[in-house]
Amino acid sequence: MESITAQQLAKLNIKGIRVAQPYGRLLGEPEKNAVIFIWGEKGAGKSTMSLGLADALAEHGRIEYIPAEEHFGKTLVDRVKRLGATHQNLNFTKWKSIQGLKEILLKNRSFACILDSISVIDANAKETVELAQWCRENGIMFVMVSHATKDGQYKGNTSIAHECDIEIKVTKEGGAETEKNRYRELTAIAVPFTAQDREVAPEKSTTKEENNPDTRENPVDTPFKITLKELDTLHKIRSWKRINSMFGSKMPCYAPKHSGESENAHLSIRYTADYPKKRYIMDLLLDGHLEYQACTEGKGGGLKACWKKLVSKYGDLEIRIYKQDHAKVVLGAKEYKRQERAFGKKETKSTAPDSPITKTKKKPAAKPKPTSTKQEKTSSKEQPTTKNISSDEKPQQQVDIEAAKESQAKLDAFLTKVLG
Image 1 (cartoon, rainbow, N blue to C red):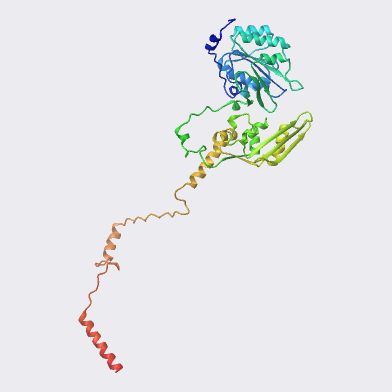
Image 2: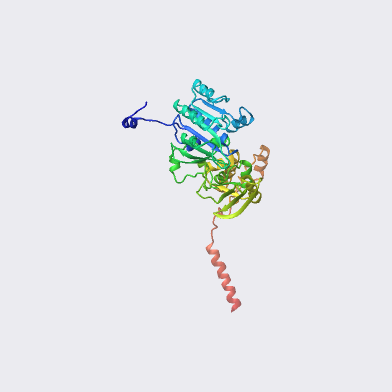
């Protein structure tokens, strides 16, 4: 279709595709023939980002992933296992040439092509743009990955950025942020590095229990707890933003599922990196005030070195988590269940109706032992014929009035004789 009227264009209903989270939060709902450009510094996590995205896109059809840098080596196998990128529609194809790639895409009726990276295939910017245009015309989504230069810019001229619909920059802090997106406003996410990071809880529908103000978010009132040392052993620290997300702080946080209890948590981390001077500073903030500053320099410096310094000094510092979903993410399933059980036991003890201190147990009355026939015979002989009557049951004795008068008269006569 070379020409179309405005009225005809207004009647068109072009729907985008939905991509699994957290990638969908970054991309929006792109068209099936969208062109995506991913770039970043060496070791930032571009291949991890592109492989996770490829596995998410595999829900819509066959994916041709071309690992032009590492081929089918150990690093690729480890990354596939780590991310759990094992969708049946995800296929890995060796790089031969641009023409060979086009033939494979048409033959397999592929939904998308991920080329990692364009720097290795010896294709200049013009050839890369032409390949992207060819994929767009044939209704194939095209994802190209590129390295960054020493100046912090992507390799190639600006024609690549102009051709793409979505431009994603992967940072060394572990984030992926859109610098261009035709399908939604610019946003950012934390790059999922493991299969667990890719798991996002489904949206909960509001129920009567949730609307009830008496219901609690946690099964217990006591908050969940974890120290910085325990946090360091449970999670791989790749980004200061991810550390903040575990604290429950949004200063800023790329991962909404780790949003925690408040905008600014009790603990927060601030990281400043001066790459030209190779000087790195990590600040520990308590309620917004600077508590400690870890500084590293040179080749041995950086985020991990600063974090290690901070943990060595404040490893016993405790984080309290009040959101149940947030606690599950930070503590992990095993530790979460352990604390839940421990809090449950405390709660049952405190809410018991009668504590063992205040309550005195009454001993049941001893049952009389049955007597033998011999004992019954002897007891019947020993028992008197008269009944033993208790003091309450004794009858009142009758008083002899005449005898009393007579004794009173004798007493009076004796007293008058003695006294007179």
